[in-house]
Amino acid sequence: MTSFQPPLLRLSIVQIPKPQTISRHLCNYLATTTHSVDAQLNFQSTADPPSPDPIRDTAQTIASHLSKCANLIELNQLLAHIIRTHFLELYPAPFQWNNIIRSYTRLEAHHYALSIYIAMSRAGVSPDSYTIPIVLKAVCQAFATGFGRQVHSVAIRHGLELNEYCESGFISVYSKAGEFENAHKVFEQNRFRKLGSWNAIIGGFSQGGRAKEAVTMFMEMRKCGFEPDEVTMVSVTSACGSLGHLDLALQLHKCVYQAKTSERSDTLTLNSLVDMYGKCGRMDLAYRVFSRMDEPNVSSWTSMIVGYAMHGQLYDALECFRCMREAGVRPNHVTFIGVLSACVHGGAVQEGKYYFDMMTTAYGLVPRMQHYGCMVDLLGRAGLLEEAREMVERMPMKANVIVWGCLMGACEKYGNVKMGEWVAEHLLELEPWNDGVFVVLSNIYASRGLWREVERVRGVMKERKLDKVPAYSLATNAD
Image 1: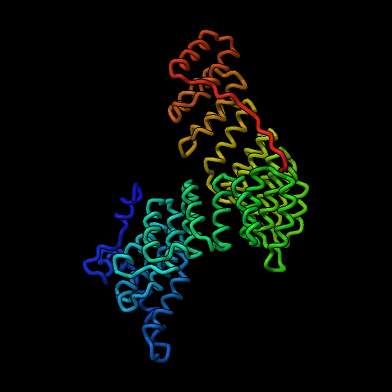
Image 2: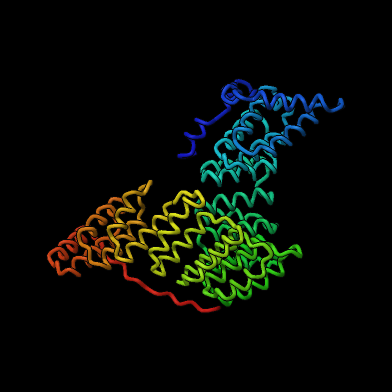
């Protein structure tokens, strides 16, 4: 299980002395504040008339409560009640185990979800075609590829590997891990694959930065006689946007409307069109799609703002943000990345500072690395290097290579030797193999006529056998 094994063992709730007994340690851990859950369940059971099948009624009641848990505390309390009443021993079918795992996965408590699955396995309960997809979703959340491989072997042992939902889950797990060859092997092993498997492989390629492969698989899917649905179109339009292929975008737009399963336009699909046209440089078409939405959500507005920002249209981006706020739509972290990026490309320093402060004062959003990176880039491009340095130093997290790179670029632009040397030290600590640091530092020295320092830096590059990688352009056609 590689590096994921220790956390699982620490969280494991399954120190089981007998195959049909749940861990006593978990029961002691969870059964601290469960009296309200017990009272609620007992009241419901006494209020209902006697049933000829009380176990089945209890199972339905617990399933209902599991689906209604709004947070981890409520779910832990309910699980403690289940353990203390030995319900899973009285009802050993995988159905209830699946509900528990699904509930933890829904609340993004993936480590707990995987621990419950381990408990299920050690209790001698075999997984079914519903268990595996739920567990694989938790595996994706935890990026636990090693654990996913073990689940794959379990599925093969139980003859579930060709199940449509299991197969899609394995494709997603391997794709998220960057193991596209394994994902494709899973896809190819089933000659009778269904649309869900096509969606999984297309989505995996699209989200994994393999846009061209995603479009190729989409074309292959159409040749095989499959009609795309809205899930397919969201993935392939995202891939098209990454390619910036306008001709393909126009063709996909028609496919989107053909793939609609309901008369009412799906907001997610329309958002993908807005994003696609924005990345292809056609904000006029993006706005046309956006303006026809009945109720644009935060993703809709954000896609427009990011599109305007990407193409340096500062006024349009900020005006769109103003309209968003007036419409009562609450911006999120991604929205502010778009707004700050627009300020960077437009050189709007004061506006950038205003919106950066607005995040916390008006919306209670804690700035993340990307927001600090935008501000450092904004200040650096404007020549406010000391302010940019202060921004880096007061960040609550350690700056990454991108943030330092923004500051390094500003030092090169304005020929600031002292700060350039300081930034170079931090960059080399993070990426000692990065030849770009030496190249930029050499340029800074050269701009100030410090030729001895230039020769020294070039000598270091030769000693480390670092060469500047030549840049290149790639032209594509519409075929």
